[in-house]
Image (tube, rainbow, N blue to C red; front, top):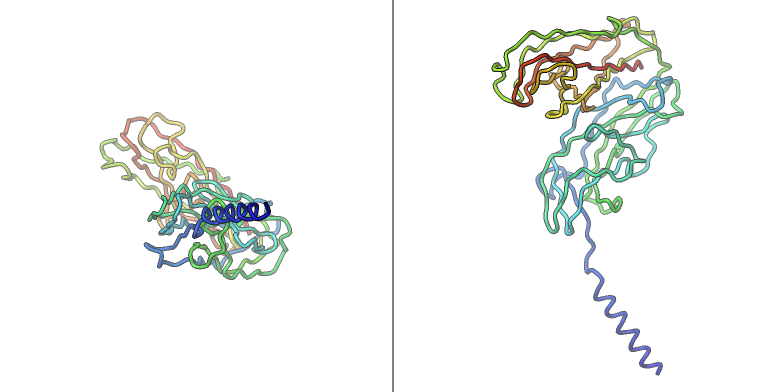
Length: 321
């Protein structure tokens, strides 16, 4: 009787062992066009990165330009690719935490798994671009002075929804290097009482060659003056209603024209300032207690044009550090 029981248990264990997978499956993502690409990329923080000790908790202190990661991912089982912010759980610096902006939303470590929308089919691969911005956010406990050095800090890791894979050489990590200087803070005065009115000239709908074409660029300067002695930089952050056809553009919210929106950007680099929080901050050094930012506004076609008026509002938030 004991022998029969023993044999029965043996047969059950054998069946269980045969049912177990011979290999484990792991999602792999590389910066490049194949699995021979890099698994890290380092972004160098700007040299003029200052943090005001009296900035409100939750404030975005700094935002990078839009990053477009050239991505190759492969997988043995079908799975989506996820961001995992601060995968090593490290403290960035006293009073600061890391985050990303993806599709207009801000995410931090507490967000957990953040779906990129990139799906890797079973036994397959994908090649694609992944856009995002890196941000630094103010937390409590910031010192009033001093400098913190940041070295090879992991902003995020790309991995599956199940968790962070520790397998080396297959999981892309975005890293940052640089330093952050804390200051007591202060204020500046925004010129024109913060109200800038731009009147673009009248144009004909037929002048737009195609979707994405722009007309009547108008450049002007936003100025912060009378800055406190301790203020080193002024951060301009812009927001508004995103156009439904092109969310980077500012929508026509007070006029009757259709198929046209406002393209807004900075004159120094010609880059868009997104209505959807994409690349929407600019940091300017304070010189002689003044900071100036050159910007532009222009019409941009987004669809078939219907004649009418166009009006939009762009909100400017300023942080002095």
